[in-house]
Image (cartoon, rainbow, N blue to C red; front, side, top):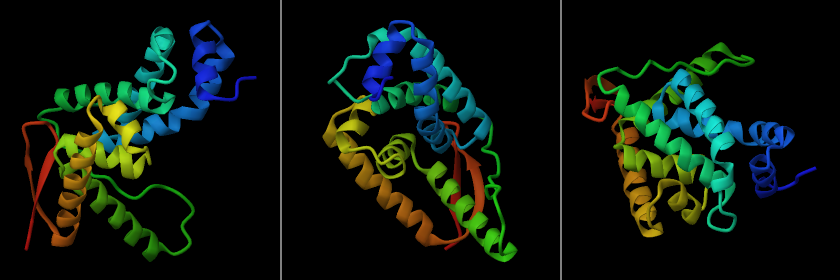
Length: 196
């Protein structure tokens, strides 16, 4: 049995299917969540997650232990694939995101929570990609600065400054209040203007 992610990657590189299945079960949720936050679309996130693990089958030998952790390596692959998806969707608006299904105890509370989630997702999607990526990696994926820098392929200082700026933009966006109008942006993500 392989305990660490590094051991699983080494076993995958040697052709061990059970190790691949274990790595997939363990790390697919991380990859999917990252891709969902970056693309804003569940179908695109699913495609990115599948493509990441297909790449793992082909590229496991290229993983270098000690250079970065397995999660930042996987998210680096996911980043490239998600950015490609965003570019391909240049003129396609983001889908309207409702609340996530689950057990509903109080329907009014569920609606309010759904609206909060939709507002946060829209505010996150409105951030420029570099800032969104930093916020997703550090705050939502809970990677360290170094791991986030490894995943984004940039210096640690760059991640820190992008995270600081992204948090500020996100806070300003959420503080301003109501969504009023959506227009298209060159990077394919929607840009939301606020009433204020």
